[in-house]
Amino acid sequence: MNKLGEKDIRFTRNKANTVIYALALGWPTESFAVQSLGLSAATRPRRIGRIELLGTDQKVNWQQETDALRVELPKLYKPAVDFSAALKLTLA
Image (cartoon, rainbow, N blue to C red):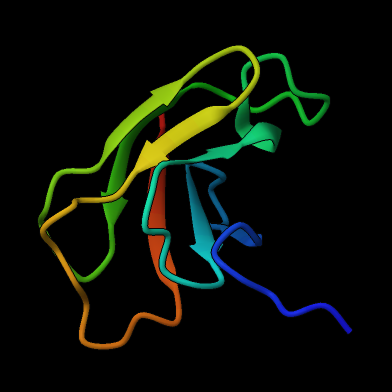
């Protein structure tokens, strides 16, 4: 069985379909790409207006491009427990 890690992402959303929660199953130490949220992905995602890292008010650097959503977590922030990174993606 393969071990899950920070490149494995799971999703859920709110009932109004205005927020997506993306959970990285590990703490990404470098930037990562989420192909399923790229503007031309087969999943046909909507534009993202804002991304927050739950548990902190630190700024998340991100760019939604044609092929993927690229995300970089704050370099200086280290959570007390690093088994997951939870992102709140508010749709535009």
